[in-house]
Length: 139
Image (cartoon, rainbow, N blue to C red; front, side, top):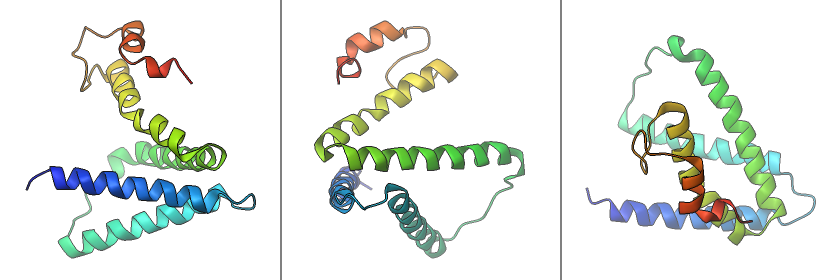
């Protein structure tokens, strides 16, 4: 399958979701935590429907249970923070800052696991990273 249509669908759906979330969170009485819960339930239902249609099997999760619980907690906290930032800031700023997360993921992955997409093992240095991507130093 050609990957370009999938990227286009991803970009369009992400843009629509950010604009929709911003419109829903514009009101002072709106609750970012409630929207975070509803958003995650909708995403979970979409994934569940896809899994039921395509079929799936549940692997043994016992060996990774502590990591799974920690990941769920951190993902929930991160989502609440994302919705809070979307409520406070502008959608355009949020999109730009959130889109640079891939570079932060690569930075953390390289620092913690010596793996990354943009850097090979041994040639990474935090100052060099900030020089390559100065947007991290700016507001």
